[in-house]
Image (tube, rainbow, N blue to C red):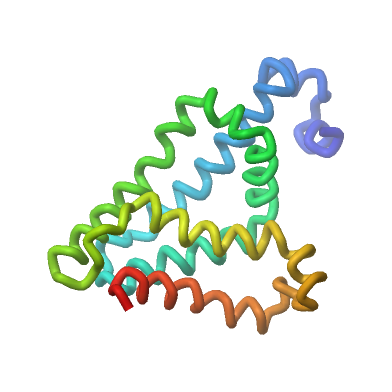
Length: 176
């Protein structure tokens, strides 16, 4: 808070006043964090790509975004510790995540219509599958790395994992 107050040339007290307290500030941070990732996702234009390229682009984007935005992953982890208490109170957050699921649904529908993708895959499950791998390798970087003696932040490990999630998701969707 001290650093934010200094950068904005104000006081912590004024920041809390503006956001109606610590809880309001935290909600604003959560909404901005989720808003940022969803805004970039919207710019991917996944529906303009062929099926496999669209899925791989979403997986690559999620991988890169979470790898580059450690604070986003920490924020999600903290909110999970609190059982999504704050997210549940935000109408903006409840509606913000619908767009990515709609985009995935349209890609899956195209894939089903072309006989390429499995019929039973739900958009939220696909989104979870991609997010789970990408989130895990950042959120558990230190514990997993220590236990298995592998630096998940190392460039060579990153370059091995990045295509791995796209490959896994595409194979799953194709039933392979």
